Amino acid sequence: MRVYIICILILLAYPTFAKKKINNIFYAQNTLGAFKNAPKTAQEKVKLMKSIGYDGLEGFGDQDFLELKHALEQEGLRMPAIYVPLNFEVNGKTTHPSVDEIKAIINVSGRETVIYFHLLSKSFINNKEAGDLVVTGILRELSDYAADFKVKFCAYPHLSSYCETVAHSFKLAEMVDRQNYGATMNLCHMLRVEGSLGIEDKIKKYAPRLIAVNICGADDGDTQKMDWDQLIQPLGQGSFDTYRFVKSLIDNGYTGPIGLQCYNLKGDAVETLTESLQTWKRYKKRYSEEK
Image 1 (cartoon, helix red, strand yellow):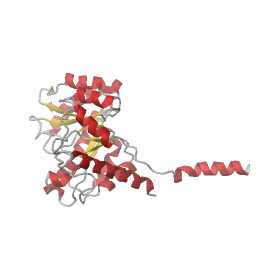
Image 2: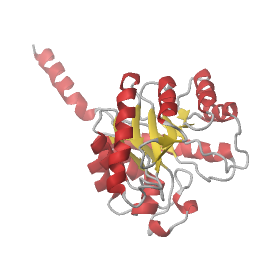
Image 3: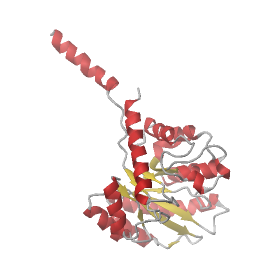
Image 4: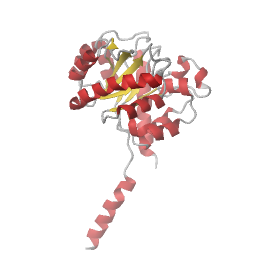
């Protein structure tokens, strides 16, 4: 009886001593063109990701989507997220790609794939209250269509686009009001548009709706006045504490994919991407060792 009680006490105490872990999918965004030895073809990109050890690579819905998807599948890698521009105007229709073309992407996307939309609109750029009503109708239609495919959606906050902030991405998620529609945090654009103050408070507020996050190394300070070479650096570089950003995400329950922002990173592709992945592994180790 005594041994039995001791075993029960150990089992009850186990969760307290269990190590915390970061289990998020870690992939590279498909913005590798500035490297001096940038991979050109889908096969070259996938070979690079495989050799370094990334979980996958982002897809572009308006470019070589199917070719890249096939190359990733052949190597056992994933396409966790697909970047798709969504142009909408007063007539409620989308162009380049159209709703039907987006549905075709949904048809062949893997389960749990996140499609994040880069929203663009000349008609509503200065009237987002009206624009939100139009675009959420489109997004709701796509979300309903994608439900059986287990594909998820969100708006990608991007400087000078229709959706620039995490708050707007979150607002659209609330308006669409579908289980497979969420919000996105894009670190470099958040720093450029919103600044670095209050980020942890934003994570706490928006974490329940987040389904995609992109990170990078960056400088801290007056980030709204900084150029992209300061705001997009290899992971582990810059004065901004990206580890703390990741830690806050995980502590607040974020379990979705995390993408490495690679736009305009220069130098050697293998060295830079390897350095970033090694930093990510150090993040995981550090997090698991913290009490």
